[in-house]
Image 1 (tube, rainbow, N blue to C red):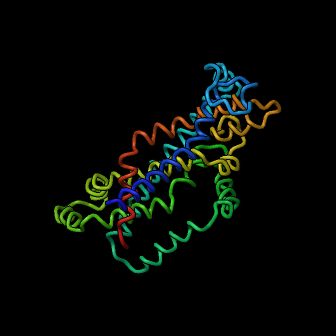
Image 2 (cartoon, rainbow, N blue to C red; image 1 turned 30 degrees about the vertical axis):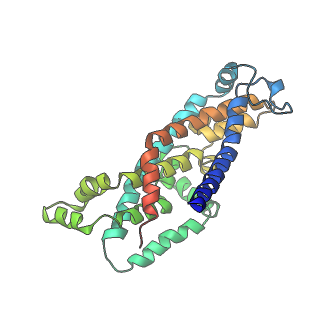
Image 3 (tube, one colour; image 1 turned 135 degrees about the horizontal axis):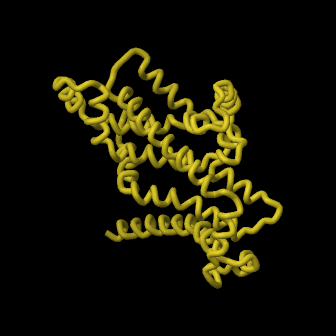
Length: 275
């Protein structure tokens, strides 16, 4: 009994420490966004601002068209998320419940792409997008990020746990594969779909290199590009930079709060599946 209590204390102590270390930069970011410039780098650190200086947000968010940047990021991330959920679930369904020649080899090839940095394929990918005339367009921003190997892996691992009897019953009843995917697979795999949706949205929302390559018009810039331009201006105001950072992080926080239960359950159950 004593060993179990001691083990629990150690585990929860480590978790609390990790949580505190993770939250320290976030707390400093939010606190700094409400400070005046002279209070940003005071020592010792002032964790609480002397007041709520909302003018930092007003000044920062009107310095550049952040509303337009936000709209571009929302469109890019949302459409990429929807495409990724549809394609990854279809690919995961194929790998989990179909048997065909070369299936294992194809799955290994998909997983091997996780070891290839995006920087390696960025130039040929851009040349292809440029050849199609998709510079400074939503298709150019969205399509290259609409399918991820990690999403296919998560869906495949989760769908291995769905009994084949459900699928065979649907086929006997005359359901097409698309109907099985949308009416059987999707309702049974909500946690995994939520995990793929969050991973894709966060990845695309934070992406910087690809929008930097494919976009050179201010009207098509995403929020990370706009934040980088604002931070690189001649006069650096860290309290306003932090205000923009808080503004950019809010959609991610809201998305996670909306899907956190299914997200955690999907990740936990995915780790229990065996290929």
